[in-house]
Image: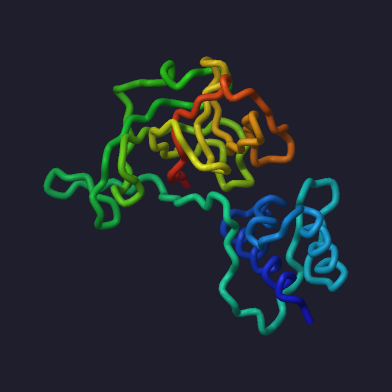
Length: 232
């Protein structure tokens, strides 16, 4: 018999794999289960592995495979307390009486600034001739813009190369939000922002990349991630 924590972790991993095709990060597991440290996650994973519910895949960081689920496991999946992208498949636009609509809801056209890549400030990306239509329900109050993701540094947050991310312009965000950050006024990047004392950490969501830490005067927030569009 599994403990409540073991069951919740197994549900979380199974749900995340089915939804995004990847295992949640250890930080996401820790936050979702209300654990104080990642060592607790390690212990739960080891116990699930010993009981034959999961298997670690060799030579791959944080790669797990679900072997089986308990027969009585019908509870709702546990969601990580981290960004879960609202994904809209591309190509949704229709023309009805001259209005752009998406799945019955009004669509809004927002600027598409181009690809976000290291070494390129947001201002340099701006191309007012390009835009993308998104459902109005995806946008919160305020001004928004879109960027095309280049690279795989945020794949464990469900953000893949080629995705179009929707950004709400703001210069203030809560700790742990995924943001467009401008470093030293010339390098724009999409990362999770965490404040650590007087420093700011920009965390990738891919174990192949390192977290970068800066002084507060070196990083300015250009916007917060609110959704994404993926073309299949």
